[in-house]
Image (cartoon, rainbow, N blue to C red; front, side, top):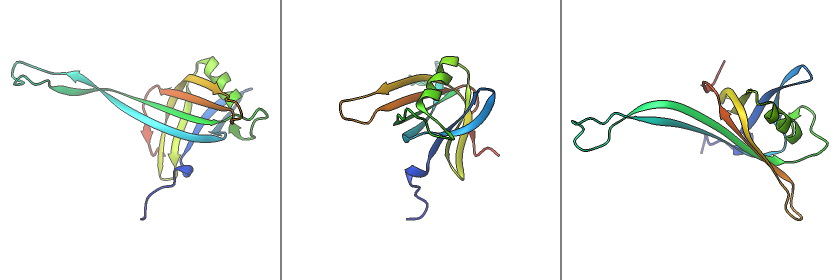
Length: 141
């Protein structure tokens, strides 16, 4: 079957600024990534709606999330768990890219959740959630 993409090729990247240097970096050791887009509805029910609720489109929102393995030493050229945590504490929006060549989504988001997990005799992992602030572009030039 042609056209089915291997999910391993889908990448979550963030553009961060550290020490005055701005760089777009793929999230290190990422094991999963997802993009969710939602549309809120506005009630537009009237007496002529025949007893059924009627709706119109309203605000759109989007969120990115991902998980990865923790590496204390960091990975050159990639956003590691420590850098992502520091970025969250700043509370500033970061530019995010999700996808692969030919299918890319880009927008600014704020890291709203970051967690570290470490089970007995398991790989240490982190989870991250980013909430979009503004437009999510599809295949930006």
